[in-house]
Amino acid sequence: MDQGLVGKTAIVTGASRGIGLAIAEKLAAEGVNVLLVARSGDLLADHAERLSQVTPCAAFAADLREPEAASQAVAAAISRFGRLDFLVNNAGATKRGDFATLTDDDFQDGFALKFHGTVRMTRAAWAALKESRGAIVNIIGVGGRMAAGDFTIGGTVNAALFNFTKAIAQPATRDGIRVNGINPGWIETDRLKGRLAQAAKDKGIDEATARAQALAELKVARFGQPAEIADLAASLLGPRFAYVQGALIDCDGGLTRAL
Image (cartoon, rainbow, N blue to C red; front, side):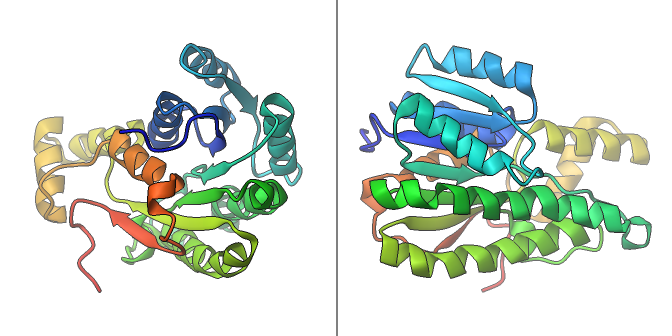
């Protein structure tokens, strides 16, 4: 189905792997010119070259913890493609662990990339998105809804991004920009596979058993696929969902059960 995205331009952060790469791939398949942003320069360039066989794409290697990186990424997108219609804020993994072992640096690093990176990217892109009457999708996470003792950094960052997404939807409405958030559950990424492998090692079981145990504990039928988050993101960016504004949409297989 044509989602009305052909010829638009998007920035996708955290686009070197996992959900971010899946979103970049989906948007390229829909005819969107994509600037892929991440720290992994060589890997990012390979992905951009591959996607350019479908539609013009480019790589921009940057550490979004650096204050100037966001404005540089936006400038690169406009210089390369002449416009900016969409921003997908996806970058940012936070450290898990027992709270007593987590340091100030761990917390500051968690906020520096995922929270402050999102804030800076949004601010840097605002004028261009206002001009194009564009859209923002923030990839956040269900951990912001459900407190977990080993996820004190990530859960807090996600909760802050919930508020940020809702808050900026107000001036965005005034300026003709759509803003929404997606909260993935447990998605089949390299990060999840690493967690399952570590759980198997810690418990002295095979990875298939560790996977089955995790699903039983979570009370979900399966883990999600990055492409499922990408499909939802593309839909939220397109005109068919133009009346969805300031929404926080859980895509987690039923994991979140609170109202």
